[in-house]
Image (cartoon, rainbow, N blue to C red):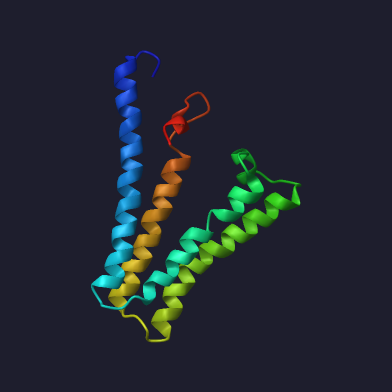
Length: 140
C-alpha cells in the first residue's frame, strides 16, 4: 500500500472506521429491538455483560495487546483472560437462562444472540484492522 496516494489511503482508513461504527450501531439496534419488539425489557440484562467484558483487559492487560494472544507467565494477564472469558460466556448465558425461565421468547433470544455476534464481529474487525506497520488506531 506504499504506492497509494496519501489522500486515498486516508479515505480507506476512514472507511474502516465507518465500518466499525456501523457494526457497533447495528449491534445496539438489535439489542434494543430484542426488547422493544416484544415489549419485554429483560434482554437488556445482557448489556451489563457487554460493559463488563472489556474491563479485565483494560485494567490488567493495559496497552500490551500482544500478551493477549500469547502464552504468558504474568498471573494478572491470565486472570484478565479468565475473567474476559467468563464475561463472554455470561453474554450468551443470560439470554439463554431468561428463555429457559420463560421470561423472553424465541424472537427476543434470537435478536439478543445476534446482537452479541455482531459485537464479536466488530471486536474482531477492530483487532484485525491494521498490522504493525500501519497506525490505524490513532483515529479512535
